[in-house]
Amino acid sequence: MPSVTMKVNGKNVNAEVENRTLLVQYLRDHLNMTGTHVGCDTSQCGCCVVHVNGSSVKSCTMLAVQAEGADVVTIEGLADGEVLHPMQAAFREHHGLQCGFCTPGMVMSAVDLAKENPDPSETEIREWLEGNICRCTGYHNIVKAIAAGTKNMQG
Amino acid sequence: MYNFQYHRPKNLEEASQILDVGDDPKLVAGGMTIIPTLKQRLAQPSDLIDLADINNLVGINLQYQSLEIGSMTRHCDVAKSEIVREIIPALSSLASHIGDSQVRHRGTIGGSLANNDPAADYPAGALGLGATIITDKREILADDFFVGLFETALEDNEIITAVRFPKPKRAAYTKFPNPASRYAIIGVMVAETNNQVRVAVTGAGDDGVFREEKMEAALSTNFTSDAIADISIDDETLLSDIHASSEYRAHLINVMAQRAVDKAT
Image (cartoon, rainbow over all chains, first blue to last red; front, side):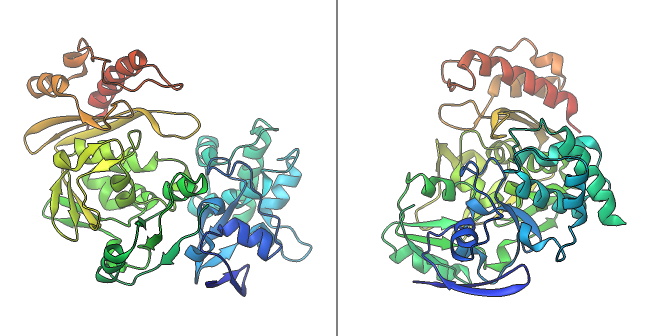
C-alpha cells in the first residue's frame, strides 16, 4: 500500500493507506482523531472541515494521498491544553451549539474566516457559513459566537 | 469508492505519459467533482493523475489587455485577485460565488471547464467573455470548446494549461443559485467584448452552456435591459428537473440577463 506522510496538529505522521482513503477516514480511522465529523458525505454539510496548508477544506472530499506533505490542523489542534481556543470559548459563551455535531466544522471554518477577514459583518459571516449546515440552532448563536470569537482572536 | 492507481507527476510531460499508457486514466485538478463521483461509484478510473505538483499551472497574469489564468488556479484565488477585480470584475464576482468557501479553496478553473457541468459557472464565464482555452497541444476558442453535457472538445490525452480572457468593455454575471449546492439554476454572463455583445447561459441548456443569440442581437444595437425585456426564451431545449421546470428556467434567463445588463461595468 502507498505510504503517506503529513503533519497533523504539528506532529509528523506516517501511515500506509489505500489510494482511495479519504482524508477524513485517515484522520478518524487511522489516527483515531474523531473530532472531525462526517455529516453528509456529499461535500455539502461542512462537519468535516479541517485546515490544509492554512485553508479550510472539506476533508471528505480530499484523498489522504492528496495531503502528502501537507500541514493539517483539525479541531483537536486548536486548544492549548485545557485552555480553549478563543473561537471555541466564544461558541461556549454564546451557546453556539446544541447537539454539537456540526460544531467542529463550524469552528474550523470560523477560524479560517477570522484569518481572511478580521472584522466580518453579520452578512459576511453568514455568507462564509454557506458550506456549513446546522440542523439545530437556526444559526443565530453561531453567528454571534463567530463575531465574538473573531474579535477575541485579534485581542 | 473503487480503488485506483494514484500519480502525482512533476511536469506536464510526465502527466501526459501516464495519460497515454493508463487503461482508463482520469486527471484530478481540485477534485471537487471527481471525488464525489468516485465516492458514489459513478466512475471507476484505473488511474488518477493529480496535477497539484505542476507549478506552472498556477497563477494570474496580465498580457496585453488579456488575463491569462493558469488551469490549476483555485476559485478563491481568482475571486481575491486584485488584477482580476481591476480588469474583469465580472469574473472575480463569478468565482466568488462558486460553491462555498471550502469548495473555492480546492476547486480550479481548469477542472471546472474540463468537466463542463451544465450548471457550473465557469463555462458561462468562458463562453460569455469569449475566452480561449489553452492546452498542452493547442488553443481552443470557447465557442468551439463546449460540445455537450459534460463534454468538451478536449482529446483524451489533452491537458488544459491556462485560460485567456480578453478584457471586456463591460461585463456582468448574475446567478440564481440552487440554495443547497450553489450551482446555477440559471447563470447569465453578459459581455461587450471585441466589438461584439455576448450572452452566455448556464444551468438551463439540455446540451450545456449556450449563447442566447436573440438577446445578443438586441443588445448589440441597444445595450439596456429594456431592449431584452420582451424577448421570450423557447423552453423546448431547456432542462426541467425537481429544482426548476423548463418554463421557469426560460423566465429566469430573461430576469437574470436583464439584471446582468444593468450591472455590467
